[in-house]
Image (tube, rainbow, N blue to C red; front, side, top):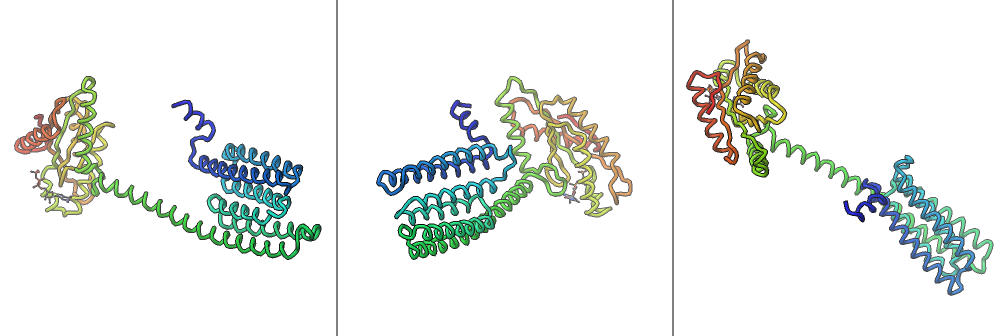
Length: 369
Ligand SMILES: Nc1nc2c(ncn2[C@@H]2O[C@H](COP(=O)(O)OP(=O)(O)OP(=O)(O)O)[C@@H](O)[C@H]2O)c(=O)[nH]1
């Protein structure tokens, strides 16, 4: 990891939620900085008293730093993101009101910031919280304007304050309603994303797993074999020959004809479960078609592969399938070794021939190609 990346991880962590909160904090800090610059212009032009501006800048700076620490350590302190967003919004609203009181003739423009603060809440707080914040901001602004026009009517004419308040009320209520709509839109998007990812999981399973037996299907087995070829080609020195076996259940047509298709399906399921239970971790068994199965045994010598198949045959021969009236199930197998660098399709062809020989020789046996 590069030094810069390590520094960013130290600063912002790795959790995407935390990073998003910190991005909001940076956006807020940029807004605070813009307001401070404008306030300094007001001081320079004699609109705002330097002492009053200094106190607000100090309060704002300390608060912004404190929130940066709180956002970074929020998870450890057990603070929920929406709690942090609401606290930050309250702090910003207090700063906004304060700025209003000391901005003289520029004060109406300052109220734009109140709307911006509530727009921020759309992304981090719940609609109910945004609505309560809007109402709280209105009550505080109303109280402040009342107090200002009452204590200094020359600087804060009552009519001007009343009309300014009305504009603010309309803007804040509209913002709160929009916030609710935005929240609904976001919730809908979130649930659609969830549904999409579930659908994608289902498609992935359907594309790789056989419906009846839950084994790897033929399509996916081709991918497994190609991946195995690539793996061995990339490291030929450490590679050992693999084995491929084609398995076919004996007299399966009779099972269907005598006991019905449903029992035949149950035999296929039972066979698959028993066969899989006899495999090792890296072996892959696929349903190759009908009652035929393909087994890949990576890095395996033929004698070890034969042992796996014999273990499988033992398990299958003693399995019980409801409706089969105790009939014993067996399979024939053709086993082939895949030499390093050889395409699997060639080994499968040899295994197929060996399977044919096994059937010809009386079934219920393993023939090595
Ligand atoms: N129940 C059921 N039967 C299937 C399925 N797929 C294929 N079959 C049946 O499997 C039978 C395969 O029969 P055959 O190819 O003649 O083979 P067999 O009777 O096993 O004879 P041998 O292979 O020579 O021992 C056919 O009757 C197919 O209809 C399936 O998904 N479910």
